[in-house]
Amino acid sequence: MKIDEKQIQEIVKKVLLEIQDKQSLTEKPSVEFEARNGDFKEIGKARPPASIKEVGIGIGPAFGISIHNTIKGLPLVNVLKELLAGIEEEGMIPRVIRVTRTSDVAFIANDVAKMVGSGVALGIQSKGTVVIHQKDLYPLTNLEL
Image (tube, rainbow, N blue to C red):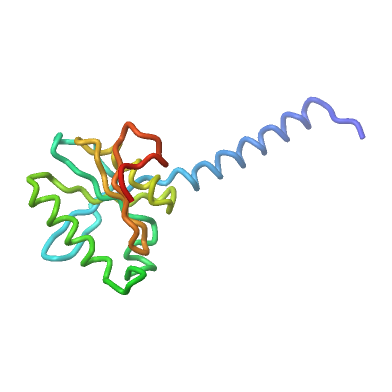
């Protein structure tokens, strides 16, 4: 079988298109939420940091969508409300951001830590595991689990 230059170009084009399609599936934007009247409303793509007092709360892709309770049966919404209250009690500004590129709690926390002014974030896995992370650490060198 003989392959000419035109066939090689076609193969390369198809491979590049396939790579672009796979990248667009994995590079989903993070989504920000706000708390209103005891409920959470999606407000769009995560924005840049606005204050050094921001502390992030990163939630996983299934959090509140297909998984609604922790392993122990606590409603995820209640867990999130308590975390928000704790951050506000310390005089900080909480930001809730859904990370859709991974469900690994360490990577969720690390991603969100890079999106908030303080550089510190809590990552919550959909089953309730929580990690505290700082933006200048590697994803698996979190502060606390």
